[in-house]
Length: 329
Image (tube, rainbow, N blue to C red; front, side, top):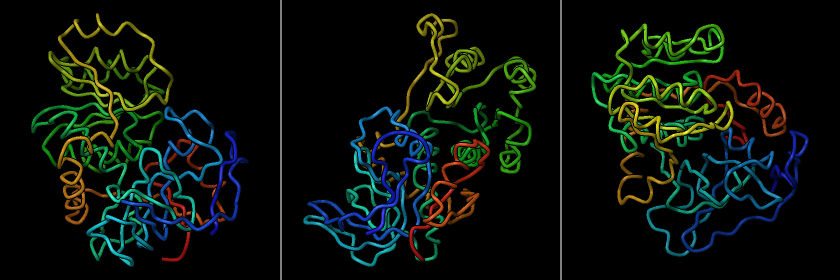
């Protein structure tokens, strides 16, 4: 089968087209005929060799896919060949950038008959991350205020929609003017251009110095401790990445300044709580089908244009999702 392989970590030129042996499902596994694979920042990290978890090279990267089930392994129930599905390839398994991939059955999500496969590939990681951020890692309530950094990215846009639907006020920051326009269209109250404005001053001005209940930070660096200063008493920060650099500050005294809290987040940890993962899947599928959650797709690249896809992703100009079309739908 055709696949895109990273033989060893490096730049975009490390993405190479290869022929690989057809995968076979092991016990509890499913082989999917991949139609679309979504591109995520973790794909860049795995290609460059800086992903936090171990990756064995050569590797076929790709975290989320949509397509149809080709075969199921021993012990798999409720999933059948030919069924339209989306899937997250799991914490260890890779393979979305290939014509077929093997996935643990617990990561496979049957799709409604009228959901396009493009949307099937775009929604899993982003929408489930957004859902669990404001429902599991924190219980966001109507009337509360949330500050979302990098609001113009796919996760930021999803958090915005779900938080607004909950009745919360959303404040966002973006790296440049115009990057948060989609978030404003989804109901964010204000988006702050960090390149031109001190976001702390702007948040305090907007809230009348009252601060926010929740911060969702994917940037790290000095933005994380500054954000924590904006929290109300007993406010909460969730850090989901370090796109601006690794934060280096004394956390303990910062927490005691206003009885606040700081947490990390990994979406797949929802699987450790019985029933929580499926609850999230049902919830986001319901939002998507009802139209209370949109998953904007900014571009679909043909299989032979994966280098262009990675250049686009690395440009940090994307508001929404990028997909790789592996085969015809």
